[in-house]
Image (tube, helix red, strand yellow):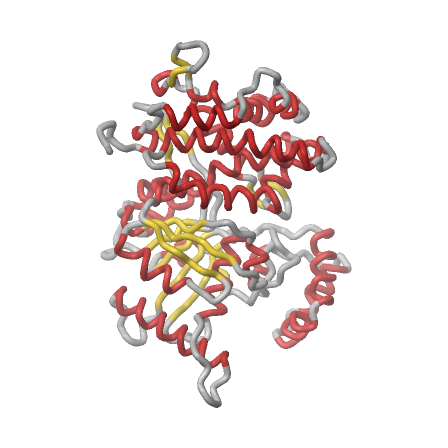
Length: 462
């Protein structure tokens, strides 16, 4: 939202004027009448979904006649005593937050919760700017709605902040509320995950496709936004970038609308592939966390794992994309930040240390859904199908693609079949018969691996 600072004009005012210009431009493109605010609704209040809505509220919330930002989350999720105590410490460590709560007459309930005299709820604290999955990073206060129909029925832009595993169900319900709509809304999906469909042929189903199928909203109105970023760091204004991917009609206007000085948004037409890559890196992040924990953060072991997992990811991208080289930079950047500080790598570490167990499920208190677990299952199922077989370079016979991905196979046995302990990931990367990662990459580049049907495209697509 930058802009030159004029004489006597504070930078905040200059930025505010630029924000209003961008909002007015998007309103015109959407055909909004004067006095009818642009209604932006977040669906799902995990860390990234909450931060995304808070960024929009900070940028445009002061223009109340022109924009309205709300977020939906389910009611009834209680905040446990330990989290309430930690939240109280967070509040008292930040004078600006403390003063804000006192002004809003909201501080006393946090004192009572700290003493165990009352129960706080996730939707309640979100109104005060605290996301249950990220209480260490206070956000701006948000308008929270717990009735899904009320939240979405007249929305112009809907932001999908749900895990991919919840997307189909919730948007199926939303689709029923939208049956009488005349104009389709715009949907921006933040979800990173996939499902595998095996009938009538193996293919990937992404969250944007789930949304389109569930609601009837055309895919040209549904976009994916992703990038190498950590939600809390973005809200704290650390420089970051992202890509919004989708049809020409909306991606450039939305990239301009979402861009801020510390959050640069580029645009790209390749919706489905970027979405799939966002899910793929979560698979290998879990393994990276395991290796780090099991080797006491050995730099050598982590680099061995990184070389092997990136060669598998490159191999898989050659199956999915005709020109996979275009994805190398974004995929590696997203993988890198996820290995450094993402929840999937954290989950792998905790599993390997025995601080979490698989029986606890993949929805973890304070972290939300670990989407890499379902992605491991989906990619394994998809790449195990003989109908998309590839030629084994040494055995000189056709094999399912998963046979060329030993780390994916090991993660499936650990996380899904549960017949191997976490330590077996080390056996997978230390296998003496393992290919040099360079050979797997050369194998991918030297063979015609591209299977357009995996992304639901006709076999004849070029």
